[in-house]
Length: 398
Image (cartoon, rainbow, N blue to C red; front, side, top):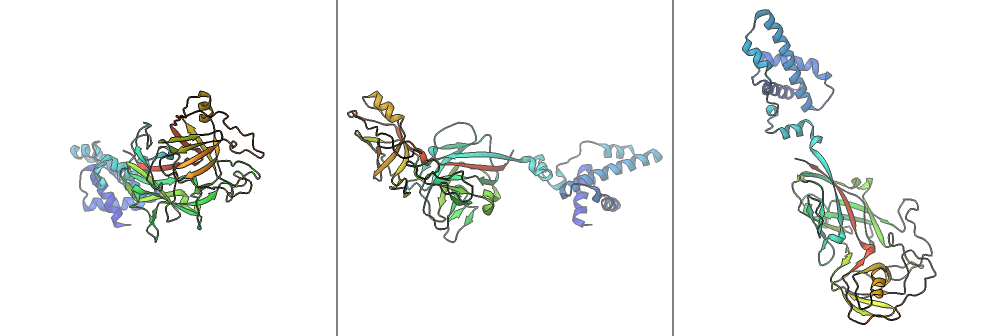
């Protein structure tokens, strides 16, 4: 029998009884373990130690009762062996009951949390290559934050579920995803790029191997923006099923910053919403809007023969002029045919059609009498490029 195992059981017995074992008692304990260990169904050492120690004490109690019935043994020793205030925590040098539970049944303290990162509420760096959210442990909904229910600390692993982003040129057809605050524990490429997850680039208009559920409609005049110009980053069985397990649990997490690489060059993730906009001009056929910051959208973004050109799903929120009817028209319209005028300015055309429209195009809906200045707008949304990232976390609860 393993001598270390005997020592652990003996310490457990001594911890429960408060008495040191004599050489004779240790020999009895060794014999008891040799006879009974094979009958303990749970093969985890820590549970075997506890079960065998407790059963040994019970067997000694039975022997002691029989002996006392015959020879009227010392009552004080009997009371000692039968006492109930035994210290179950200190037998393995554990200083708290929580640590004891963690040793005996570690899964009892492991919990799951689920986190959704929405680019609409992210803070972008100037180059739009890093998105940051504040991490909160409550249900308060505030700008630039993500939240989970209840306190989350001592994170043991994180799993990334599928993420959809704008397409980008990629020779290896792989993307790396990094949580910047956790970069100390991460994979490291020869270039120095760190990452936690790898995603296979799945073109949603030409999917890798998922039947025809995302197949593009041939001859479609206006793209379906739910799949157009999109890569789904798939972390399947080839990529550890999207898991990253930490060698040392992450104690706390106050912010989450995500970057995506191709696989080592950072990918630009354009903003979904611009809130500091200026309406420059309103004409019968178009609206010009200055976004007042780089938008990182490109033209053209489609080379398909059936839908060549520059296509985005754009909405204007809070447009206001002297004409309430024009206001309602613009605020409720999905603009799909876009002209990129400058790195900070766009033109929205009325000569377009709804997403997914097939040729021929519907009649043009130009403004016959565009309203005179001034014009204002609260925000512009590129609805087709909102990024939603879902993560699953395992943590050790209090």
